Amino acid sequence: MSLSIIIPVYNESSQIPITIKKLSVLKNELNDFEIVFIDNLSSDDTLKKLKFYTKKKSYFKIYKSKKRGLGSAISTGIIKSKKKYVCVFMFDLSDDIKDLVKYFKIISKNKLDAVFGSRFLSQSKVKNYPKHKLILNRFINNIIKLIFLSDYNDFTNAFKIYKRSTLNKLFPLVSENFNIFLEIPLKIITRNFSYKIIPINWTGRKKGASKFKIKELGSMYLFTLLYCLFEKILIRKNEI
Image (cartoon, rainbow, N blue to C red; front, top):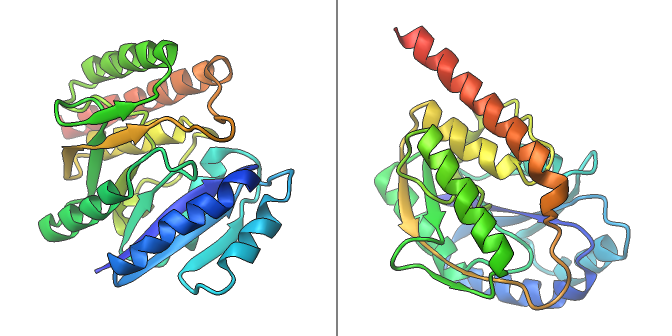
């Protein structure tokens, strides 16, 4: 079984040595894999530095997004990836590499379309989550859970794994920023693809600045929510 790990990158120059070193341990855990970096048109020396630190390791691939926006970077990563399964992993290492390996084992052994990690199950461990963001996260995710009558409670978390052929069936992906991470799982759920929910760990970044801006993204999340809700209604009508 093979795995593509998509990692969007934007102005992460100072984080690069740490992340590359951490990701290199995957060669001891996975046999057939690639790590696909998508540079989201960085304005610093991220791309140059990324090429320097990865040039001697064939499993690292680097591409540039065609336009600014996390949604575009993720779509580019899906198109450029070559392996059977695709995992989205954030460059700041907020998610646990051990959970990534666990994802891969579960999805490949159980023949699922997706595995959704949740940071908010009893076995999950969360560290350094800013309190105001945590409150907003729980409010939004529980509202979405009620609207879609779902058993999942962490839609907005980026870190998930999918069968690549299933992701291709979700195109076009219309979300342009972090809301891409809401669109994909909602489409998986409303289109009745198979998935499993597992607990994962998360640690807030200590170095560099978060690219997530609540005030700027509110309207985008609302757009994605309404878009996917409309799709759900259409699917239900066609089934009647």
